[in-house]
Each structure stands twice: as structure tokens, then as C-alpha cells.
Length: 156
Image (cartoon, rainbow, N blue to C red; front, side, top):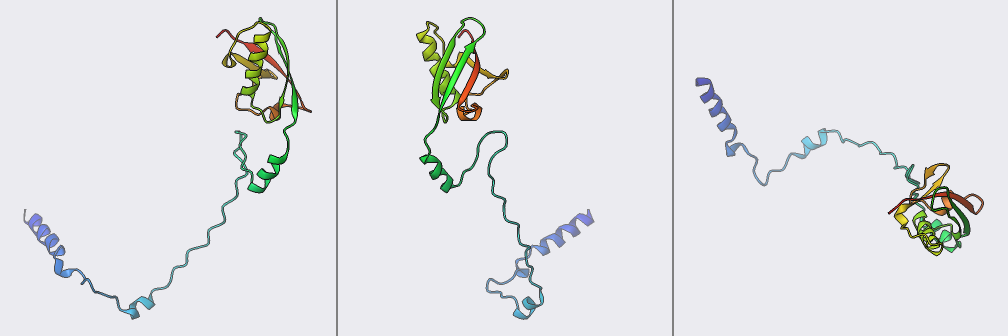
């Protein structure tokens, strides 16, 4: 118990406000000059990111964006065949900057003209046995201005 009271008295004496510095206290300039200046090392420049791998997103500088805006999107011929019922053979043409989702909407319109009612969500477009995601751009999957899809239409 004696050690606790000794500790408490020592702790309270440390909290004594008389030991605090005055509000107008200024450190002696001679003592400041003795401390060496610390120079931080130079940081390397951040590398400019040109794209995000795997997602197809690319950051294009402003100059290139304006140059690309002047270029007219080329037209791509699209052929879609379904292997199972309902059997369809659809031929379309669309601009190369169109998304696969927009192509699916065109397929739905063409299928309606041939008597098949469906929605864009029930249409799956495949290239080399793999489903092409809706966010993909038509120009990315086209070769020499043409693209052929295998289409499947599921019941909605």
C-alpha cells in the first residue's frame, strides 16, 4: 500500500502546472542551430497508368481523345446462327463502337421479325465456345470488319 501512495504522489507532482512552459516561451536560438537539418529523400515520380489489365479500360490522354472523336466508326458485318430451336440465321451490320448488349437488342428485333419473341437477357452470344460479356465492344471481337457468333436463346 505504501508503494501505491508513493507512486500516486510522484504522479501528481508530475502533473503540477508549475512545471509547464510559459505561453510566451521561446527556445534559445543557439540551441536550435546545433540540431542538424533533416532532408527527406526525393520520392520517385509516379508511373503513368495507361490501362487496367484485364478489364479493357484504358486511360487516353486528352489529345488522343479529340483525335479519336473525329474518326468515324466503321461498320461491322455480324452473322448469328442458333444451333438449337428456335433455329435462326440473322445477319446485321453495326458500328464498331457498339456494345454487345446493343447487338443483342438488334438480335431481339430481328428475331421478332422472324416470329420468335425473346428478350436481350435471354440471348447469349458465343465466340469460340465462350460467352461474350455485354460490356465488350464489337470492335474488340471483330476481325477484318466481320464477326460470327453462335447464338443461344433461353426461355425467358
